[in-house]
Amino acid sequence: VKIGLKQFGEGRKVILTVSEDPKGLDIDVPGITVSSPIEINAEATRTKDTLDINVDMTSAITIECCRCLTQAQLSVAKNFRLDYPISKHETTIDITDDIRQELMLTYPLKPLCKADCKGLCIVCGKNLNKGPCDCKI
Ligand SMILES: [Zn+2]
Ligand SMILES: [Zn+2]
Image 1 (tube, rainbow, N blue to C red):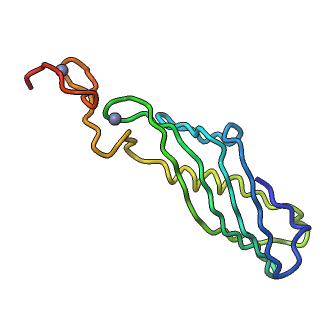
Image 2 (image 1 turned 60 degrees about the vertical axis):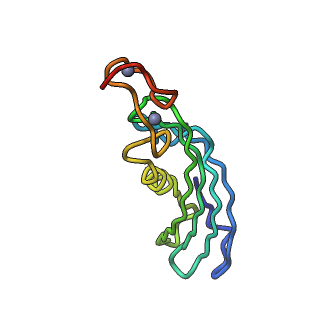
Image 3 (image 1 turned 90 degrees about the vertical axis):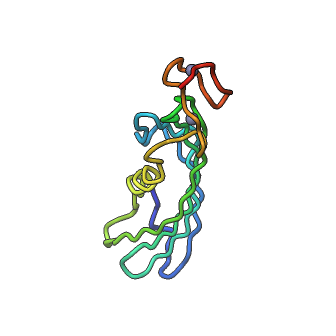
């Protein structure tokens, strides 16, 4: 995601809407895949030597539940603010790294398909969300 600086007059606000393909960002981790485009709505304001960007980001991730191992979709949303110092020579600001970092911060540490996931039976391996099994444990 690159922001061209030419469009900014000092103090002027610029609204940016970007839809970023997650494939190019290299943001998947084991058990978590970003499964829909990252929608970015940003409001950027240039002051003398900084670009102040207020970002609203939404996307969806596919997780593998750490208890029952089924896949589930979670939507993620985050609002954050970025400040970039800008020098006279710069014509674009690349915010891709920050987008990547902020998105990865929304990843759950223990991905669950739902908060009360019952997990798998340790004896027969049945997914207990789909009903009880016959094991007596
Ligand atoms: Zn689960
Ligand atoms: Zn069982």
